[in-house]
Structure formats: C-alpha cells, structure tokens
Length: 308
Ligand SMILES: Nc1nc2c(ncn2[C@@H]2O[C@H](COP(=O)(O)OP(=O)(O)OP(=O)(O)O)[C@@H](O)[C@H]2O)c(=O)[nH]1
Image 1 (cartoon, rainbow, N blue to C red):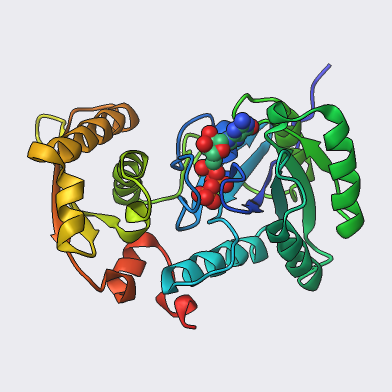
Image 2: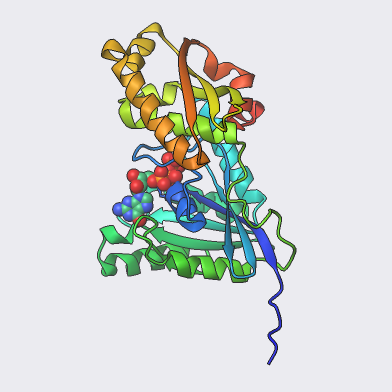
C-alpha cells in the first residue's frame, strides 16, 4: 500500500499575553531550542521573535511577542504595538493566561481588545499556562470564565516549563494552519538576526543579575561580528545605560558583575553557535537612549509606534 504524502502546511502563530505569562518559555519548548530569552522578570521580551517548529508536514512559525500591559514609556508603547502587530499578521493567535493569576485586569483588557479586533479569518485559541501551580477545580472555573468572555476556537491547559500539553497544542496548531509551502528551510529554527540573538543572550544574563529597575534602563547591541580564520567568532557588544551610577553597578566591585555576565553570556553563545566565541563587552552611558531611533531599530522595534 502506498501512502499519500500529507499536504504541507505553514503559517504564523502569535503567542500573546500579559508579561510573564510564559510566551518565551512556550516558544522555546515548541522549537526545542532556546530562541527567546526567559527570565522571572516581566517585560523581558522586547521585540517579536520568530521560532520555527516542524509538526509532521506543517511548519509552524511561532511569533513570541512582548507582553501586553499598560504602556508608559516610548519603549513600552513600541513593545505593545509590536505585540498587537504580531497578532494581526498571524494565522492563529494563542492567548496565554497564567493559571494561578486567573482573570486579572490585564487579561480583561486583552480580551476586550481581542473582541474589538475580531477577524473571522483568524483562529484564536486559549492556552492556560502554569497548570503545575494550581488545582484542577480552579482550571475548570477559569476555562468557563475565559470562554464566556471570548469565543475561543479551542482551550488548552499546559505547562510550558514542564512540557505538559505542549505536544497536543503543537499537533492542533499544525493541523489548523493553512495548506501551503514551507517558508523556511527545514533546519532553520529562528528568524532573528544572529547579532540580535547574541545581544539578547547578554541582556538575559544582565537581567538575571541586576536588581530593580536597572534591567529596564539598559539595552545591549552587537556592534561587531567577526568570523575568524580559526573558526571562532569575535563578538563586540555595547551595553547602553542611562547614568554614570548604573555603569558602576553594572561593572560591580572590581568588575566582578561584568565579568560574571560576560562569562555566562559567552558560555551560552558557545553552545548556541557551536564554536569558540570571544566576547567583548563595553559599557557606555547614554542618558537618552530610550529616545533614540537607532536603538529601536537595533531591537527590531518601530520607533514611531512609541509616539504618545
Ligand atoms: N511554574 C511554571 N513556571 C513557568 C511556566 N512557564 C513559564 N514559567 C516561568 O514564568 C516566567 C516567565 O516566563 P517567560 O517565558 O519569560 O514569560 P513571557 O511571557 O515571555 O514574559 P515577557 O517577556 O515579560 O513577556 C519564567 O520564570 C518561567 O520560568 C510553567 O508552565 N510553570
């Protein structure tokens, strides 16, 4: 008996939700590799990161968006605009809600916008994440409340971190995408420039080590990327901070913080790139970087989206 090959499918799946809902964790779990940085702090993801996963004959392009929240700064406004922009362009939107936080004001606001933006051509599904943190009775009630607020095509209960329900969600997404040719080569797992992934890795290490507001007041850029004859790569990055005092905190006593960050970032880059990496970090004080268009361009954000 000969088997008929299933038609190829391909499309975009945007993951939206409040900051910390687990969008980056799910993107990485779906792709099977770390393409988007994850921290326990909110608003880590700044731009749209695309991770590519294969599910049978389907190529699913996950769009990990910045969290949706009430924006205050130009950067925040551009992040929220990038998230909704990602959702508008997607074949399927998955709203991620944290099981233990439930129907927050933030989730209500997102549901309201989803209702306003309703597009009959787009499938919108619900993924209740972090189910490892709650009892099943809570989940039932939350599922009912959320489905009463928006007619979701399907509801999934998952733990992106533990992997529960992730395969079911991926299978459903693959089967729900439109038929069509794949958009990326079979072995491509991300559509983000390498220099940006490298900067994001360093920003993740900084965010994990620095306290309070500082992670939100810095940005990292890869300034130079040099392939060397011996197969290694030299990466020069700049960390922009807003004040002299920030520079001191970032460097730490005898430069120890900067050294630890640089070591952790380099180790991850070696793993990611599969070769030797020479990483050089420089810290520059730039009081106004949050109002500079070049900084937004480097992050893959639209500067004008931040206009008040
Ligand atoms: N217990 C539990 N924690 C999770 C789960 N999924 C994600 N987390 C944690 O939740 C935190 C936030 O995860 P992220 O993936 O960075 O969340 P995000 O939605 O991308 O966050 P933003 O970048 O702020 O938009 C991290 O500390 C994750 O380890 C889960 O299924 N269970």
